[in-house]
Structure formats: C-alpha cells, structure tokens
Amino acid sequence: MMAEPLIFTTKGNVPVSSLAYSVDWTVTDDFIKLTETYRDSAGEVVRESAHVKQLKGVEIFSAAGSF
Amino acid sequence: MANTQSFCTSAKVDCLLAIVPNANTLKAALYLASATYNAATTAYSATGEVSGTNYTAGGVTITHATAATSSGTTAYWTPTASFAWTTVTLSTSFDAVLIYDSSRSNAAVSVHTFGATTVTAGNFTLTMPTNDATNGLVRIA
Image (tube, rainbow over all chains, first blue to last red; front, top):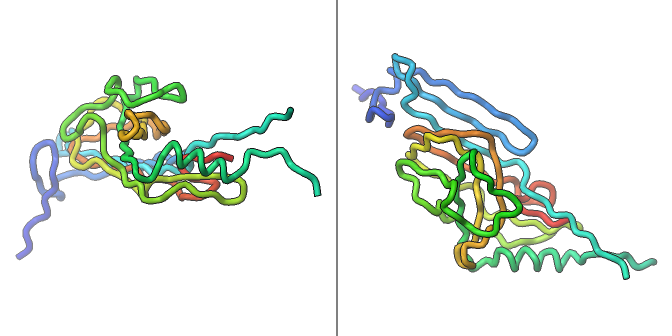
C-alpha cells in the first residue's frame, strides 16, 4: 500500500490531496512568472511558490564621440 | 573602405570582464517592492532587503561559470542558468533582485525586477535569460 503523498506547508506536512492547488501566470516582455498556490479547506494559503524566468537582461548602449 | 567610429567590441567584453571577473564571488539578494534599487545603486545594502524564514541576509551565491563574450558588436554576460531560495517564507511583497560582487566590496552589478511576489513555505526560483547578444543578463551594444 502506498503512503499518501505529503507536502510541506505552514501547518507542517499535510496530504497533498487535502489542499486546493492553483497556478497563476504573469507574462511580460521581460519575464514570465509562475505562481503556485496551495490552500487548505478554509481557503487559507498554506504554501506558495514562485518561479521567474527572466527573458531579457539589461542593455547598455555605447556611443563613441568624435574629435 | 572607410573607417567607422566605434567602441570596439573587444573593449566592450573587457568592460564586462572587469565588472564581473570570473574569479569573483557574485551574490543575489532580494528586495521589497517598497525599496528603491535602480541604476543609482552602488553596492549591496540590507536596507529594503527581504526577510523571512530561511532567507539569509545578503542572499545566495550564484554560479559564475560563463565569462563575458560577444556576438556581432554586442558584448554580453549571463552568470548561470538559475538560482533559488528553498522553503522560504517571504510575506512582504518583493519584486527585485540585486546582483552584486562580494569580492569587490559588494559592488552592485545589476538590478532586475519581476513583479510583486510573495512566497509562503515554498520556493522562489529565478531562471536567467538565454545567454546571447539579444537576451543576455547584461549587454553592451
């Protein structure tokens, strides 16, 4: 028999199946962000992670002057 | 043929190599959305830095395996594929990371923003852009 998978939350390790899982995506020209949220039966956020993919860094434009 | 006034690409690479020498230790620290880190930032500071469970002031050391290089007339540099904070709780909204050189008096290198974020008993991962002349983390065009 397989043990029920647990996940670490603000309330300790709890069964994943007891939580509501949702994701939110933020997409811009500079980054994409995935936010994962786990809520308990009362709707309280007990675990939230975020993962950001930077799409572009910063750029410096050079200019050479003339004499 | 004609001569063309230019900032030589090799010098652009030298600039990046001087700012982020391969032997130096780079770090990444997270800042609250209420902080004001920007182009005027000169060095790491704990002011406005996030705090919370499992977050260490000063941030994390980032792998610095790829030296600055160039393509066409653009020099570019990206330090590593990703870095992360695991099982942290950062309840106050944060939206920026400062990359700085702890081997050079914590000199600031760059600030990058990613929108207001909180983390609760979870992980925060930052994945760097593709290391090329169009997307690299720091580019001199």
